[in-house]
Image (cartoon, rainbow, N blue to C red; front, side, top):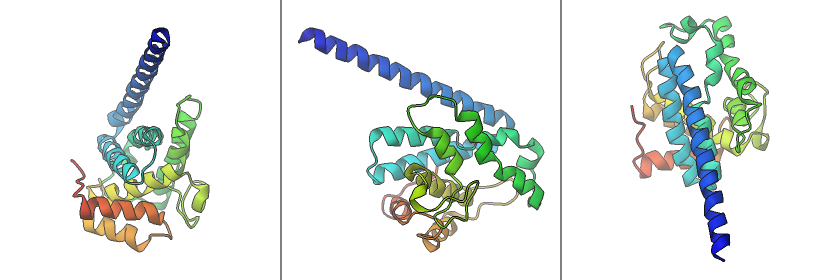
Length: 210
């Protein structure tokens, strides 16, 4: 019996070390983005915090929540393939420039697809701009064809992006962001995900930290 307990604790320690190492690797990947675009790094961290809180409200498993947090931290890793001058331009993007930005989901997937994470991180990165009605990118997925974690990440991404400053515009504000997801609930965004997001801000005083 004691031997079994010892084996259990050794296995748990091994798993904990692996998760810690993976966490360090993800942070290292995030820092690569930060060297190119400091704005994106802060955005990723805030999206990860909001996505984790939403996943908790949705009663996702601890493993799903951790995977979603990890994906949030690096969901824009594909932007390292976008010229820095486009990322930091203080004006509206041209259609050609925006098409380059849109490629970041696929680029991020290509970077991460061969990394053997215990979570579908590459898929979340690929799908975080997909929309429920098929109007998103890169693959025009609809409804439940989009991974649940990706649907959570999509809402967190939109809310954070609208509520905070962008290089080409001032912040639109939290209320505008929440109105956007509420109006497009069930059209662009998963209605259950939108509901828990609204609950976090309206009832639980969640704050997007700077």
